[in-house]
Length: 212
Image 1: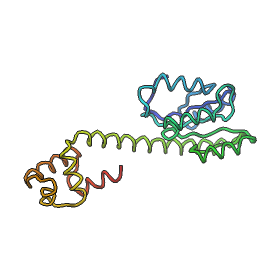
Image 2 (image 1 turned 180 degrees about the horizontal axis):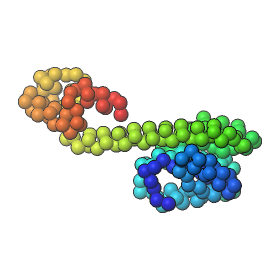
Image 3 (image 1 turned 135 degrees about the horizontal axis):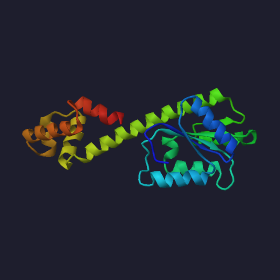
C-alpha cells in the first residue's frame, strides 16, 4: 500500500470477519479503509511507508482491537503514543465487555474513544468520521507550524532580534537604541522580517506566532 492524500481508516483486528464487516460498513459511508490482521502487520506498513516521514500527510484514524495474538492492541497503542502517531491518527479501540475498563484507561491515555462489541454501526461510523475530522485539523495545524518554522529559520540572527522587539511593541527608535544600530538599519530589517514572514504589520506578525 502506498500513502495517499485521501483519508483512510486503518482496521487492525485478528478476526477476518470483523475486518470484512468493518470494511463493508465503511464503504457504505464512502470511507476508504485498509485492513491488517495483526499489530505486527500494521507496524510493517508504517515502517515501509512512513519511516522517512514521522509526521504523516494523510488524515486517518485507527480501529484497533484490544486483544490480539502476538502484540496486543494496547502495546501497539503505546508505541503510537511514543512516536506521535496516536495524536495525528486518533485511535478507536474495539473491545469486548471484559476489556471495557482497560479501554477507558486508554482513553485517559489519549485514545479517541472505544466501541464495545457488538457495536452500533451508525454510532461507530459517526465516531470514525469525527476522528478523521480531528486528524485533518491536527495535520493542517502541523503543516502550518512547519511552514512557520521554515520561515523563522530563514531569518538572520539580527532579523530575529528586531522581530522580537517589534512584537513587544517597541518603536524603531527604541529598537535601534537597544540593539545599538541605526534607525534606518532597523527599518531595513523590519521590512525584511515582514517580507519573509509574509505579513504586513506587527500585529499580524504577533498573531501569526501566537496562533501557531
